[in-house]
Length: 235
Image 1 (cartoon, rainbow, N blue to C red):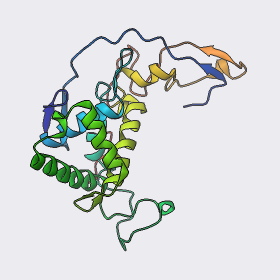
Image 2: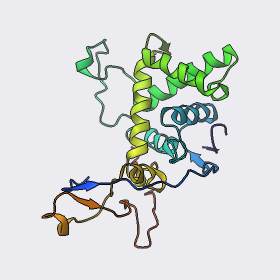
Image 3: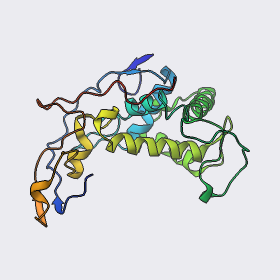
Image 4: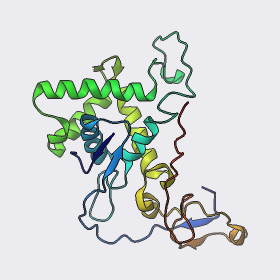
């Protein structure tokens, strides 16, 4: 279990969804996260990487501030990370892009294997990812995306694809899953969230929806509670 702060340590509606105007983003410390899957070295890479994949700007927080590393950590520590719904019996042979994922690794094994190889190589080079400049970090992520690197048996482009997909999901998913803190992404794009009913709007078209988003995990006082049973764990 690792606790770190910062880099180191819907329903379809026949209406026009209008994003809220965002106040100027105020500098603030990233909220501490208790990591259940990632170790300290992995945390340093993942936090720095998602901060470059979806960076904060002068109006809105980015993936790091929205708790995306927490989302990825909890997913990897649960049934998805264990490959609960993956076919695991081989044969393990290279496939075509249309055949999808063809590796023997579970998502948890893929992240652990690739991150171990990345951190080892960068430590040998003397420049851990988290200590690179933003430009250097972007260049390194592009090199992973381009492929051609073997990360302990994981092709670098396959790892990048998993990291990018998890980052987007964590940024845009319901906060009940541990990311999208304060429904930041939903406020940014004007998505109203998980309202139980749009009955009063079914016969209205082209209207403006101007209401704060709501989460599946939100109580009557507007507080969001992350469900400790999500993600489920294999027994």
